[in-house]
Image (cartoon, rainbow, N blue to C red):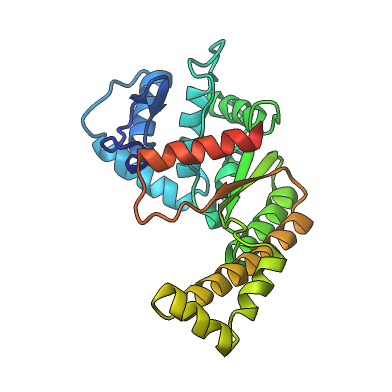
Length: 269
């Protein structure tokens, strides 16, 4: 994420990375220290020593502990824990991988099953209200128009709807290829493979035209193949879908981030 905004790596506290845009990295141990300071009045220390080792043991034995700290930090930034509002207009979370996100967003359920009373129970109830309110929280699935990512997105959509009460707001499809040629133009390119035509093209261009025709065929084939994957995604995931074009670059940076932002802005409007 830091590379996308051309800044040093984010720390554990909000840092301004662009005007009115802040970033932070959630660290579960630091989140625990912050939680203990705010709720148990335990002062912040360099490391929490024995308590950290106890936490690691509990987190390994009890499902949902590390996940609830991550969600708890986000909830704190969103203005929970008795505060009237958040200082942020919008919080965007770059979530964990597909295989872990459902468990992370269901962590409050595991904690509620273990803790029936007290401040932790109250706070997990608040988290549940935040996460399960479609007016405040929405998950955005991201896919690319290829077979495996589309299959994973369809599967994730099914698990979300079956296992959680968290709203899925939309799907963003990344790296969508432009339609460079119409069907009629693709047929013209195919007709140019006739030996008599390729000879004329070679004389006109001063070099073999076959690589150009191969490139046109590849562009058409990729567009059509990915179009089939997109069709399957639209049929199986009935959500608003927004498309980001493939920018054909080797490295990411602030320029590409702005291009993606512009593409999404145009899609949303």
